[in-house]
Length: 175
Ligand code: AMP
View 1 (tube, protein in one colour):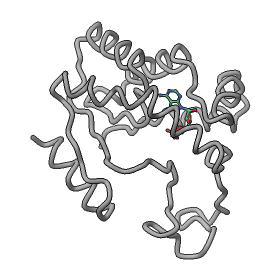
View 2 (cartoon, rainbow, N blue to C red):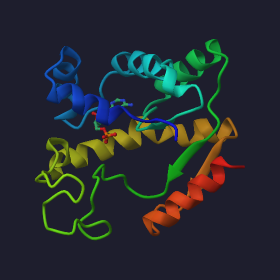
View 3 (tube, rainbow, N blue to C red):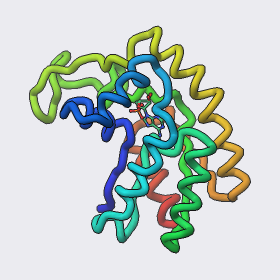
């Protein structure tokens, strides 16, 4: 019952709505690059300051770089808050809501929830995914050490059933 804040979703919504932020973000996303830190950090800090975040929130896809993590820690400290847990899923994040094998739709290429047609995201093309993987190793993987040192890193087996991954994360958050 707390908000799920996905920076990727926020950027995609902005692209769909043709906002200035969306236009800027798209040029990076389509190349498999990270959107510059300064465009992401303010967005997240504004979002977690909204009323629905008073009881907590889940950040998804953020922070993706050490400077983002440091900026977040600083902003949270100024708000009298801190990050409780960093959850690391030990699988490659495909970014898809459905998975052809592990979470298929009932009807091929049709969304179970809304009946809409499913598409492959522009940034999920093989060449872009390869680029994103390189960017991950260079810029995002160092966060594993960052949160290990902060003593809040929890590892979850991301290769098991989705319900089991969810239960494991809920268990950690309840500790
Ligand atoms: P995602 O849906 O989390 O896989 O994000 C899709 C794309 O949005 C990424 O490949 C980046 O280009 C951009 N993006 C999302 N979150 C961030 C972030 N925290 N920092 C920089 N770029 C981001």
